[in-house]
Amino acid sequence: MVPLGWAGGVVGLILATAISLYANALIARLHEYGGTRHIRYRDLAGFIYGRKAYSLTWALQYVNLFMINAGYIILAGSALKAAYVLFREDDGMKLPYCIAIAGFVCAMFAICIPHLSALGIWLGFSTVFSLVYIVIAFVLSINDGIKSPPGDYSIPGTSTSKIFTTIGASANLVFAYNTGMLPEIQATIRQPVVKNMMKALYFQFTVGVLPLYLVTFAGYWAYGSSTATYLMSDVNGPVWAKAMANIAAFLQSVIALHIFASPMYEYLDTKYGIKGSALAFKNLSFRVLVRGGYLTVNTFVSALLPFLGDFMSLTGAISTFPLTFILANHMYLVTNENKLTSTQKLWHWINICFFALMSAAAAIAALRLIDLDSKTYHVFADL
Image (cartoon, rainbow, N blue to C red; front, side, top):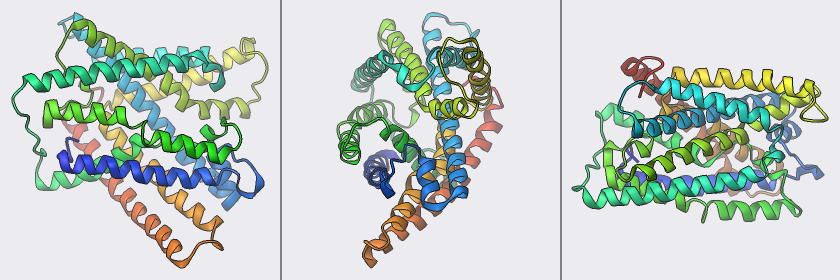
């Protein structure tokens, strides 16, 4: 909202919701293409295009998931630091330290939860943590907005910087709605798979986006162009309420990261033949070394460049745009070429070309933002 303002932000969020629903619906309809259930995005791409497309899609997915994980570690570290400063006024716990602690907790959780289906009750806790954060952030933001003078909603920066930040914000919008792993999620849905997945998508992009809208609009209304990347850094209110929200955000980030890291864990487990009891010495030591090593690298990158918004922009540009919009439209075009009218084919080609241009522009804008922030804050910055 900050780089887009009220008009651009509201329109952008609604448009991102609509195009994300459309693109994900295209992928969902291809889940059983050719009479085979494609439970991984890379499997679907490989089935349609061949082995090279399989490898390219997996590389894009890996980048997407790695960057999502980095974002969650930064978010968890930011929440931990926000909780710390509520009780201590010293500068002892810097953001890189909090990110390191967050990464360690994520690694411990990954070691203890051997596979995605073992999350079980943790998904229930995840829902509770999300609701705690949403309710507290919304209520405290509204309270601050009522008590404060009218906010400044002008878009900061020069004319040139506004162009780059607007393009970067578009990548943030699509990143917020998309995962690049819809077939992996769809693999767990009961028959009829496509019909039930469409119901889930319609629910997600209507009812499911309302909490996001509430927190986003309330936060921007209350704090305007000075809104922090992590909203709870701005709010005023009872210490216990802010502490609850920050702790909920930290714990939710740990669980959410595990979900988005699971495709990588599953790939490594399969590649190295990890089977049988999760507590077997071989399996346990494998998780400690491999998952712990993977998250160590992820945590190091997160602490090195803890610019959450910039990470979101870059991820949206180099992986979310290609995976969710370019590839989805082209796959649907290829697989339904004999069924589509000339107008429908033109529509998909327009989408492909438009999002390819957006991807390139957003990548340039994101790299510029990272370069500027790196010069301003230096590596391992305490934001």
